[in-house]
Image (tube, rainbow over all chains, first blue to last red; front, side, top):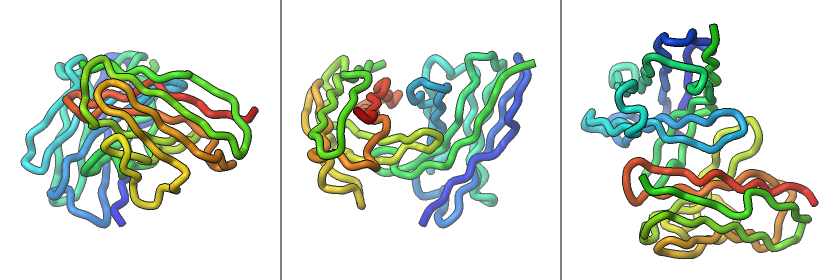
Length: 115
Length: 107
């Protein structure tokens, strides 16, 4: 059973960089592609980007200039970096994966952007 | 980006009711449409892929249909554990886009 666990600071100051990690257990991150998805409180889900088993990445166009997704196969972890954050980046952040859709999700980690 | 809309945005129903939620894509996405269920404070749960194929373990009271631009999610007999928010998501092209969600609450 593959399990995903997000971690990272819950509070980030405006203009700084948001950094999150998704630790995967029960399966290798080399096998699938892995996405980051976020959800502001009371709003819908927004896909941020993904990293393929090859290491190639694909980002949401509106966030592309600020986002980097990477992986560490030795630690079985996926990372998200989002630069120059504003209050609009306050959200629950999830990592997720799957073949036909997002069929496996972490529990999510809440990130608040505030000074 | 492909835009996804859902209707209604919310509905009130009773246990045993038949519930239908509609999802519409801004362009033809064939059958590349997924459905999710989300309860407050929880991650989404994958329900249906390829518009009509139930994910492993999803009860048969859930069904999906549609192709092209118009899709539906139907719960044939609403159960207490089905009160939640349902979202569609297109997997036809990047970026994957989710609908805004439909909340099913107690009548």
